[in-house]
Amino acid sequence: MTFSKKPCALALTAAIAIVFTASVANAQPRPPPGGAGRPGGGGATQSGPVQNRTVGPTSGGAGDDDDQGGPAPMRPEPQAQQPQDPLAIPKEIEGKIGTDDPGHLLQPVGDRERDFYGVYYAERRGDYRLRLAPPFYLDHTRGVGTQLKLPNGEMVSGEDQESLYGGLYYRRRSPKFDADVLFPIAWKLRDDKSNIYALGPIIHRDAPDAHDNWVAPLFFEGKRPDGGYFHSPALLTTSHWNEKGAFTLVGPYFRNRTGSEVDMGVAPFYFHGDNPSDDGARKTYTLVPPLFYYRRDREADDNHLTVIGPVLFEENPKKEIFDVLPFYFSSRGRPESGGVRETSRTLFPFFSYAQSDERTRLILPGYYRKTTPTADTMITPLFAHATSRSGSTELTTAGPLFPMYWKYTDKDLAYSSFGIFPFWWSGAGPAGDAYFTPLFAKSETYGVSRTYWAFPNIVVQKDAKGWETDLHPLVYLGRTTESSHTVIAPIFWDFDNKKSRTTVGVPAFVRYADHTDDSVVQVAGNTLYMEKRVAGGKDWQFHVLPVFSYGENPSGYFWKVLFGLAGYTQEGPTSTVHALWIPFQTSGPPEKKSASRADDAPHR
Image (tube, rainbow, N blue to C red; front, side, top):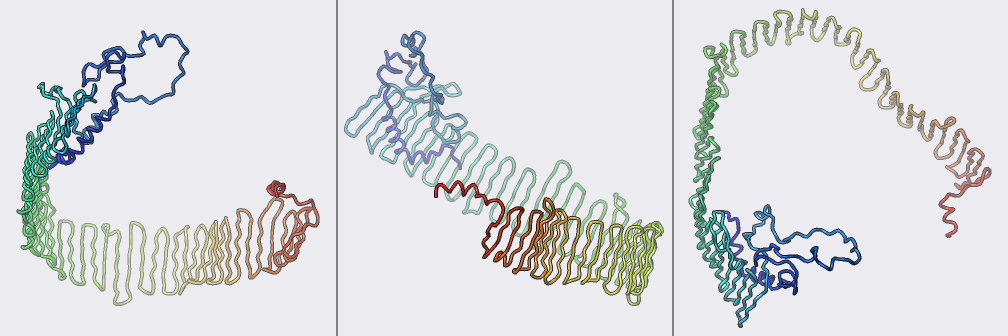
């Protein structure tokens, strides 16, 4: 059961809410003398204590002498416009945050009146009133003396009064909400036209076209305009229903309705479903697991299926099927109602027979025969013969207990093949020919490719793009229009294409050439050779690692021993001697310091 305003939580916190409200009311500042709402203050007056409509002149009007003459005021800084009522709650948000404020009361205005007699305190301001005699009595009222017009035109009191007696009894009276709570025993709440009565675990709620009755935790019952519910854990019963469907569970019995579709049963013994349809597509099923029974009916295609243990029977206007799983299978067509004239019988694994107006099929252990208007096929372990396309193709085989005989012809494609396996096979047609023997084979597609095979593992291929010769699994040689490869496993690999070439010789030779920039990197033993194309020529280096290095480029050359223990470099007019890995410039323009070093020098 759901309560929209949560009155229970309101009652539990009533005392705190009233004290907090009184504190806020006491903290409200009084209007300044002569200000708005005071006689003779020159400000706006109000039409009533609970209305906020200005009916008098306001300061700053056209007849105000203070605005005439004097220097022009400076342009103020832009400011956000303050709403007229910062505490007002928009209509679209009011229903989401759970407020109980009916929305007809405004901030109280006017002079504050106070009375204090010992433990009794009272104050009033406009339509607001607070009376306290803690801890015995607390009373908070808004809308004192106001009237509220209901949607039906009836005028009622607009007061909203909350009272707490002895810290246990809470009472509230307002146009839309009433409450009488003797915490925690008894509750009586009214929310507009909805009433709730609670006495311990007994709860009753009534509203227009709806009610709820609870005796927790024994049963829960309720009604709505479009349905209702009933739950009783003690009776193992739950039920709920509405215009779209219903569900009921009583022990092992269940019934579920979705629209017009119904499923019901007593688990795990009986299950039944019915899906009626106005367009002739009704479906029903019945399942009885202890009896191994299943029944299904489909109205759309008049299909009926029944299963009782291993026996299966299915029928529709075109065919009927009767099986005893997994050994016997049979079916029969119904030409009188639009089906095909056919029958089939299978007793596994002994025989299978099928017959119709256009085909027959017979299967026996070691024998298969099938005939159609355009084909005839017979297969046995020793002999097979097949024709298709009204005799355009024919296949005859014999074997495999002796050298297998093979003959195949296709008159439409002018193709034929003949073989006595494993000694000879050949085939020829307009597109090419081929033959195979235990030691040699050839296959050719005219004008496209040709392949030769020689025992045990030599393959030679040629086509319009190149050639390839392989000696599996050691030697692979080949070339196409854009690449070539040479492999002598496992010691030599060479792959060449229009972008690069890679050569590897095990164990101490690697060469990579990039054809796009004419660069070469080659390692042979402990020698390294590098070459690349640069402006004006080539830059190359040769190293006998780690002893000696020599290189040249368009602007000079160099040589080094042990990477600079001793050496000489010539770069244009500049000569450099290397001794103990330290370079000494011997000729040419003086070395220029870097910008960073020149900038740092004055600061050192």
